[in-house]
Image (cartoon, rainbow, N blue to C red; front, top):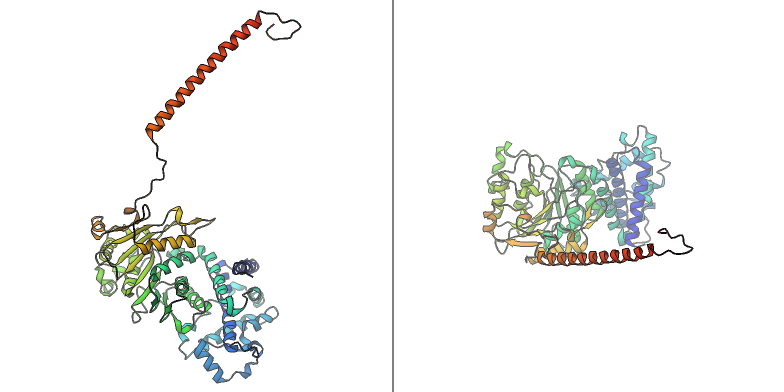
Length: 533
């Protein structure tokens, strides 16, 4: 089965599970249960593969828990970050799911056991609370134990039916695809009130490529508002053939999304010692000040959300915001995230950040921050993307690329919002691989492209009040038809002449016809019913 076919089967099965369960379970809650079950199956099979280590004589799922020695458990936990006994494996739970009267409480106990297996080990932080949103005892699944178990069993048996093929060959990608499929399909109903929008894979890929262009290795990758971790994972995919020295770092304020991000790291086979996802408010409680600087920063922070801003006078002394001399507006925290990213960026790295367009032209504090960024030569490129790329919003967002190693003082502007840069689909516009390639190529070349890209010197931006809107610098192509008025007048004259000639010909025909009919009227025609007689 091809990967495309596997994905199609995967998504069809997920929707089959949905039809069985989500009638009584809210869509967003349903997503949590499916994702949790997918994760449970993944770590079970991943752990089994680790224990068996390719030895066909070992069938871990059929071993008794009693054969597991403390030494085996400790060694496995140190390596994988957690431990799962044979009886706790997904495959063994799934066998009895339909007939187990204690399914919900058994699952709860297993999840607690997996999390607590990391206690006292380096992985404790990465496992703690991982299953919090997969509450098997929740009334969201039903009011009775029987109802809960029925729906849990439906989800478990549905996930059990998913064909991921040989674990070593393709399972990791397919688990990740299932995860991202669920996230994207429910994203339209999640988080919009907070200005949060799920980043489509294609946009994530573009951002990752921009951030890491030209780097053969990076020390570490950071997303200060990581959501479910999609941007970090795209960064991983870009570095399959490169070196990531210290792994992946991210911070997320939403507890549910924080758990999803950690799950997503595991689902994409990133071991606990290669990622660190923190829970908390990035702007007020940054967690990775001791880890900076980062060679690659990728981010899609929430658009124009409220933050304390000037209501906390101590923030102006924060080393992230102090250099700009002003704080982002209280009702629009966008530039607070930008300045945070800039502060954490290494001298050789890049930050690629999705931004709300308004921050590039509004006045006040935002204008002063733009002045700081431009005067200090941190803005490498501003890219205008097509509208309707993101689930839940039609806004045509921008990408801001920051750098501390620009070779000159020019700022590049790219208008990638036109129809040549996306494919129109039913619900959303989509960036295809060729669109991403073209944007990256234009970004790398720094050459002017008529109606698409231009580089502007510092003075021109200063004279334009530090406006960084792409439309202020890239000429818009006039797609209206150009009319040659001289040629048009000539064509009109020729048309009029032909009309006059035609009219004269018609008049002549009418006269001839009248003459002919007149002669016939005075000449009787025998044995005829001619109307003129």
